[in-house]
Image (cartoon, rainbow, N blue to C red; front, side, top):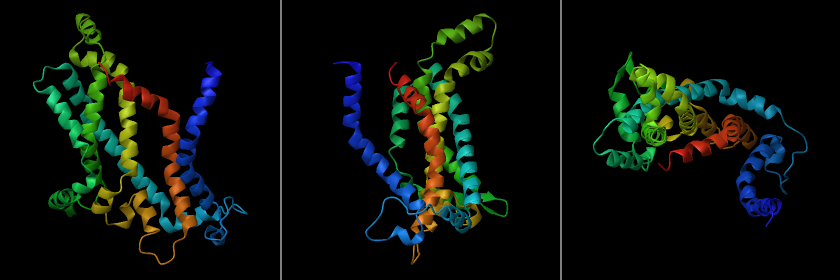
Length: 280
């Protein structure tokens, strides 16, 4: 079978899956651009009769989208940076230094990812409420959410990075030692440049998970000025007698678009990073 024919057959087989996957995004975009009277009209229409760009302006004022986006960016970036700052040296130690029970510990890290955050939120809230922070406690603070996110994603980051770090030959660092470099210098000059793809992939996965997280933020945050985008979008629906679905979809589109663009641009690096450390 020729290569062009295989490519055509592959696309034909994947077309139903692509259609099912892209259908929610198509509905979201179409609804975000419809005027209010067309959203629930019958019979329904796929394409709006006119592009209602005012949905985005009205949604921005109603949701407070700018402040919510700032909160989401701050929390996701800080949680990712904190998780990587701890995970990189921990993964390096697991992959390079002698350690008894390394296999069992790696399995333990993997098992912790099977726990849903909803199982932990009560204990996390009680802990945050018991830790003093200024005149109040860590509950209802962005710092508390950042620490929880970083701690929750730390096990995955260590597990993933240690698998990749183990594939980097130790001979490269040993050659640097022979040339007179210390371990720290060898790590900074030789090891980390080779590990940057894995660190970047782990950071992207952690960032996306922190950006989309809902349960912990809903439990810990109360001040409207500290709410993240997922919470603000839900507030457009929850407890309302009449839901402005065009505004809901406009907010969802803007909240989804940055992550979707980054993921689509870096997906090949994600696949490479996820598979390189899978087999030693």
